[in-house]
Length: 307
Image (cartoon, rainbow, N blue to C red; front, side, top):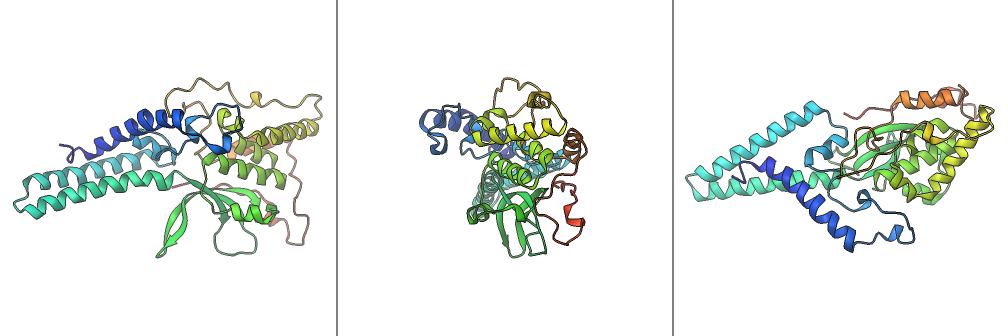
């Protein structure tokens, strides 16, 4: 029965192991050295958990998979486990039974490992091949190609280009796997340098408040953005972020409520357009200057949607 209902076993095991076992062990025994000097509460989303959320289908839901794709994938996975489970019980030859059981265990391992390789994000350049000027983008997966097969998925492309990278250390930080919160922090910084303040605000406000408190450098940059927006609108008081974000509810479990900003969801063009109106319709100042390339490269492009 465990083999026939392998899809349901994975769903239950992912929730039990991640939420009931690993989170409790990490909360008591694990110390994240990066935040060792911080007095802020470290949420479980900063722990090295195998999935973004559990049960397992929520992990792929946060990755942006279509609901229909999730349902069809669950049906196909359940059918594979059912066929292999029946073959492992009714096979007339001993090696056939053991082969079916081995294939069931292998399928379990493949589905389980899919969470570990897809839960990490990285910031890279788009397109990956060398062009005249490339924009920065958000990916998840591994930054490799294996026999022409991409082991990564493009999430979105931001407005800033690769020219905003100033130091060799920042260049080395590209194509390195990290959490979604660190990736959003980097993208917001590069948008801030390029002068696209609404885009930077959209990136930083995607990070939940608890995770943002662990990164105090974002608070300083957000204060600068608030002052810039206030000066542009000739206000005496900076615009408060609580005017843009609703009060964060109390979190329970390991899946964010629907009314909270989802850091894994690509930033939509409507969000930056709405903040652009706050920016008073002004074109952000060019970080690069006029180098004779024309105005085409200074236009804001629509972020690519994940498939």
